[in-house]
Length: 151
Image (cartoon, rainbow, N blue to C red; front, side, top):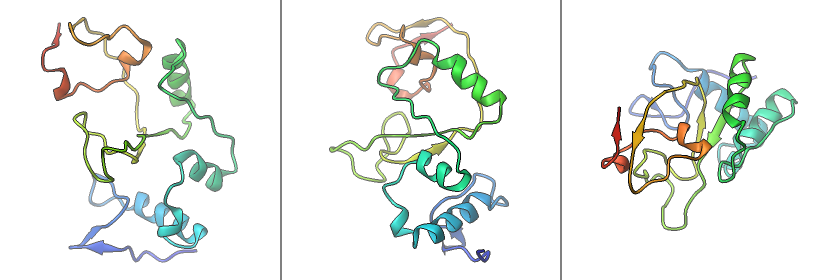
């Protein structure tokens, strides 16, 4: 059991929060997990998969995107259709500190909730980047792809 008092700075949650300012479940869920772990500090360095296992008792699957299966997209779509909890995290780099944003908009060492999947059909022309891998369909369009053209 937890109360609904959340740690804030300038009336905004310090830790987990939703883009919708009226939605508090991410912060309340995080507070409940911090209580299970002992404190907010004690829950650092865990993975989203460990947290989901702790809350549900279910089995988790971790997929390393450095060597994706050709059937990765189908697996993700099947998981989405069955309302499976999905999350992802970025690996911290030694040259980046916690809180630094990468050119693609991700924060090293941060966890993200997957709230939806969309397939985009497009033809990429990008001389300096190899977009033929199965991961190409998972990469967000970012400023690092300025020389690429999309038709």
